Image (cartoon, rainbow, N blue to C red; front, side, top):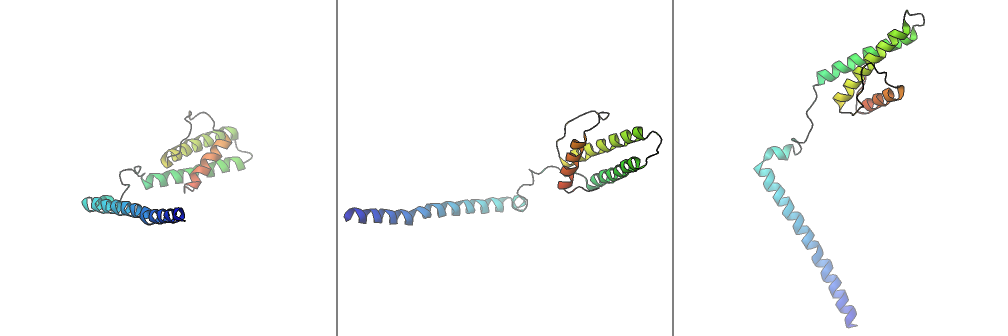
Length: 141
């Protein structure tokens, strides 16, 4: 009987005292944070200001998006015109320009892409992957 009472008393004491240490640790951390915010109010407003990547100029992004739209329309025009003189040459040139602009858009969006020469044709799967990655990040053209 005494064993059970001692065990019950030990459990009750542990349950009563254990959260106290947790609550005081949180209270101390909150107080340290308040003192730090009072010392440096800019950090309180923008806590990750120094960690952010430098912003890309939105006009450059808009210019690249407009150029991508123009090149996509040109590729579609070349593909849809059956009797065009030197159609394969025009299509190859338009796709190379589109791929170069797509690579520039990926660089602006911070996407990694394998470096390759501008004259090397990009496989269709890679081009689609880049387009999907850009569209998932909010790019549209």
